[in-house]
Amino acid sequence: MKQISVLVIDPVGLHARPATVAVNAASKFKSEVKVAYKGRTVNMKSIMGVMSLGIPTQSEVVVSCEGEDEEIAIKTIEEVLRAQKVIA
Image (cartoon, rainbow, N blue to C red):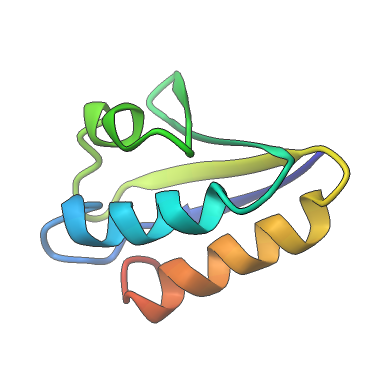
């Protein structure tokens, strides 16, 4: 399993638009992709799951990938979130 801990820097937090981009990126991989915040973990391939976390700005979240393409999955998701200026 690969995981990264990131800080959400978007002033609005992880809101719908970048969450949708992240969910679309996660959905392309066979690996199980999850995001955890405040003790709750959800499937990052589910927009409803990600939005249900209500992640505000300056929050630390953990993204984890487990499966055959976990290495490229974690790198891609990190790149997508950085490109959307959601994480530092």
